[in-house]
Amino acid sequence: MSGEWDTPWWEDGEDKGPKRRAGFVGTTTINRHDFGISRDGELTNGGSVVGSKVEITVDAEAILED
Image (tube, rainbow, N blue to C red; front, top):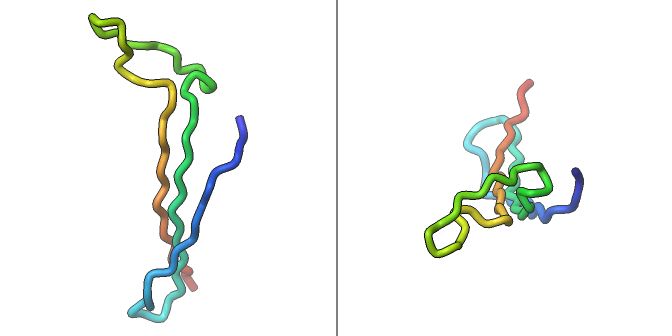
């Protein structure tokens, strides 16, 4: 499974120490059925407990070590 996702980079001020930092926040939406997750809970009115689309957000920061 592969695809594209939007990953805007952010820079949030200066580090108060000597080490370099980098960070990013990225969000994508997948269809859970594409990954074989098809078990559905059903409500009494016929609706689903979980929708097919799942939003994933990654918020990461890295610090360069010597």
